[in-house]
Image: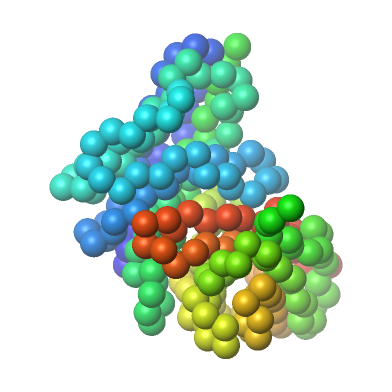
Length: 114
Length: 114
């Protein structure tokens, strides 16, 4: 059974600090990795995608991927109260009888305190 | 505006009743998905479809049915066999380009049992 594991939190960081969110996955053949942000009662929105080992930066966000360790992380620099949300890690995995679909972790709740 | 439209936003089901959740997209995406989200949980895949008139079971398909008669539409029926249907249901779509598998989500339907 493919799995995507995240610490549910809540992770509390002060405003302006770096928030570090972690995710591990079990399907070794996964090639695509995504971070989604979800506010309460809303649908997820994509904030980062990463496909190759190493770091990928986009504004205040940095995604890090290590396929050998089956580990993907998200760093949020200069955290703002508006970053308070649940962050979902998603991994492309074989699903059902054929084909691939995104498999989601349970999410990490982030709270940025003023 | 291009996007995914889910309706209704809120839906109530009586005991023994089948209900259908609507999902329409005008993004010209080949793939469409249905996910279920329970409070404090991640997204679990119910069904997905990569081509018209074909669909695949996800991880929790029991008690649900779908159809894909048109590329734009992927309705989900929650049958009376689904004994615990209360959840937030999310429809999503994507291209089949392996280098660009980002999911675009609808705004969700909250289903509750009367």
